[in-house]
Image 1 (cartoon, rainbow, N blue to C red):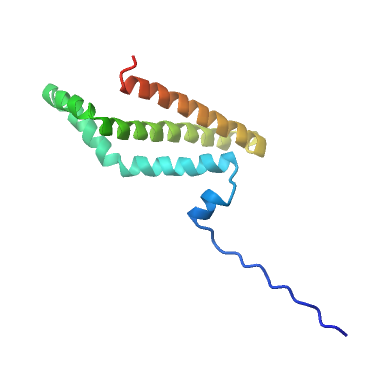
Image 2 (tube, helix red, strand yellow; image 1 turned 120 degrees about the vertical axis):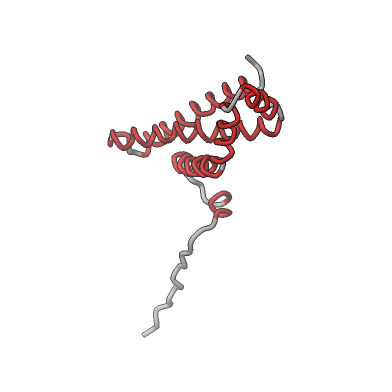
Length: 138
């Protein structure tokens, strides 16, 4: 009687961020979920900077003028724009999660994709409007 040839068992390991970004194709809802976490982390890390800017803008008229001069720097404007994107995206994705928590019909593959598209479009439009205002378009 011939012995059965044993195939080696597959090895499952945790995947790293490099494999997630290059080899593993996440659905759109997964990408929105990861961006929701990234935007929350950005907001948390830059909270002291945001509180400093808010404090400087409210102390006095002179400090507000200094704040306006500080905000006229292009690098500070870009940092502010990234933080505005983080806030707007995090807010829109948070509303999406609240709606999914209250309406269980929204928890499906199709609804997840459509609400992810809505989150990306709405947060992008709001970020573009903020950038236009920040850079003096209106």
